[in-house]
Amino acid sequence: MNYNRYKLNSITATELDQYLGKGWYRMGLSIFTTQYLIFDKKIYNAIWLRVPLYNYELRKSHRKIINKVENKFTVKINSAQINEEKELLFEEYKLNFKGDLYSSLKIYMQDNENFNIYNTKECCIYDNEKLIAFSFFDIGEKSSAGILAAYNHNYSNCSLGIYTMLKEVLFSKEADLDYYYPGYFVPQYKRFDYKCNLGRTEYFNYYTKTWLLLDDFLPNQNLAINLQNKILQLYNEVKQYGVNTFITLYKCWELGDFCNNAGQIYNHPLFLLCEKNGLYYVAEYCPLQEYYRLSLLKKPKYFRYTKNKEAIENELILEIHNILECDTFLFTTINSSEIVDFL
Image (cartoon, rainbow, N blue to C red):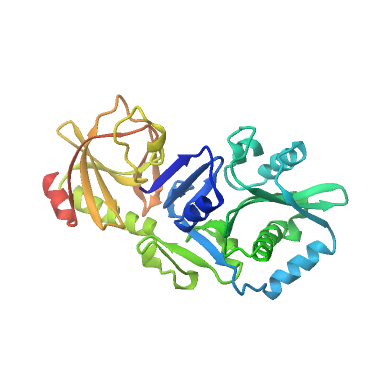
């Protein structure tokens, strides 16, 4: 699965370690994993990270940030609590945040429930009595995971978000944990690059399902680029024969687990939608398995779509917003020519 999410009623410290070790992560009271992300109408590859804590040492730049914050502010680490003070700071933080966040901290962390199934700690920073930053991180048996940080943007020059992440790392090391998981970074999308600057870092390799040094990550391991290139290649081959076809950015690709009443839901964010003799076909590419898959689409009552001509090499992209169901899987192949011949 390119995306998967389980709603949990409980989770043990050992189970959290196991999920994190397989490239999964907390979302509210759920646990999820994803290989792809969509930002600004483009697809990207989510690369999960972890920091080994054995022999971990702060860099000079890290110590400078820590000294700057601790010489000026008060820092407290305790069991996490969601209260009005943090909700207000979270609301203020969202106003200047480049991206989407949940409407409230309680929804973000607990799906708006009054309980938490995770063992969550908080790191709070105060300017005198005023809360100016906080972060939440989960503790497993031998690992921890940074979940969220928010800060007052009037203190942006104090690196409070980086500081709380460093304190989470140090807290985890002092607790004799083995790994700290900061979430994912996204190649070619700089917003998450700060997570790569904690020191010696490993990434989860989707092909080998093992953790390797981030320094060894290669561009040809980028699933989003591989997917995009193969779909574009197939598109150029198919359109030569006059087949009515569109490169499709599928906005509902991660909703399969939430549509129990629907049939087989497509779970790739990018594919070809082809029309022939009144029938619709979906041609997908699976980068990990390195094969194409062709299926007959169950024709929806309508297509909710917008057009985009900037996402991939100035080709017209259809962004489809309604759920699409597969009628019949036809075949898989490693040769794009077999799909061209069929269409």
